Image (tube, rainbow, N blue to C red; front, side):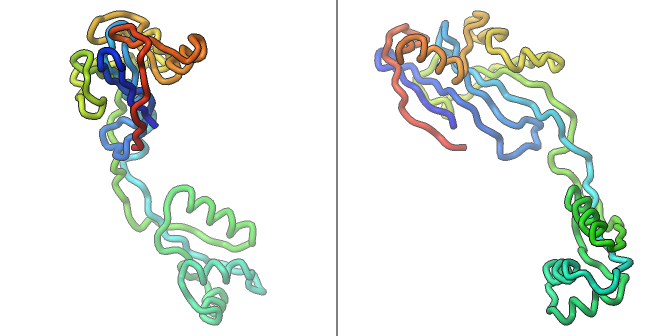
Length: 227
């Protein structure tokens, strides 16, 4: 949950914290907000999805082919739940395989269903009924560092970050360590600070951190925002 901070001396505003994107089709999963402690420019580290899944998901039908006698009560319960049948109709169906237990299921639910049926000694198979396109499938992106045009007195979410630098996709350190990044405005290296770094400074400096721009000890938390 990001927080907005303001300097009571020079009115600089910036935000720290992180949030997840609600739409993942861009190939990015979220952002970690940072500020440059040398000039006060707002930055954000946009984190790329490490896995965008298959292009299509298999929608499958589960068909029960063999039922031991007497009919396992758990099967009757599953039939009533998945097929919305009465107790009598579910029991009659269970006694007359083959029949469809689940018309549409996919992924781990298929494996879980087959495992549960096997434990009850119930024979079953699946068949693919449809291929459903994965809405977030696409090429893997690399993390990128974004920045505003310079220090601002506007809230982070009201101030666009137009500058961009792609980070080396093979370097986990570049994604993880703020001190390896450089400010896209003043080009200072190792001056970007995230919420974790800000909290560390608060602990070391007795709950006061100087403003990144004017260096006055006048920073106040204005608000929090939920994404």
